[in-house]
Length: 115
Image 1 (cartoon, helix red, strand yellow):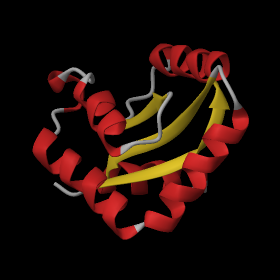
Image 2: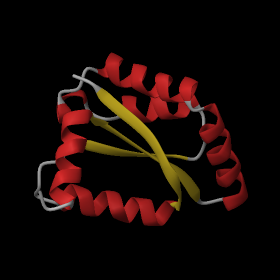
Image 3: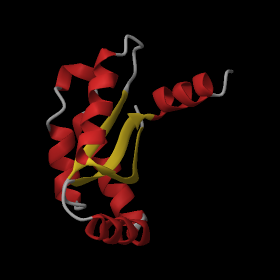
Image 4: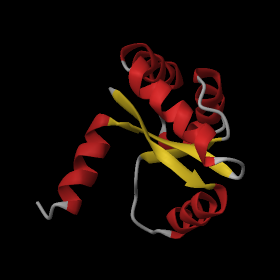
């Protein structure tokens, strides 16, 4: 399976918490995980993905971590941009990222586009 990781933006912590609560109540099966962290570091996102229960999505954790590392290496400018946006946003904010297997993400986009 192939996985994708992207940094999506900065959000107030309370807003992200509410969003996560809505997602858990959503009956539609999704294989997309949104991660929030107070620090925009590689280690913080790896630790964040490691907290997802291994049975939740049946992911290959090592491959997921490799996708995060690959993103970090290939997108240094983007990472620096989001690190500065998080710093500018102040306290009580999180950097938000999405990790998913590519097929599930493609299916989600097709659903949203009505295909």
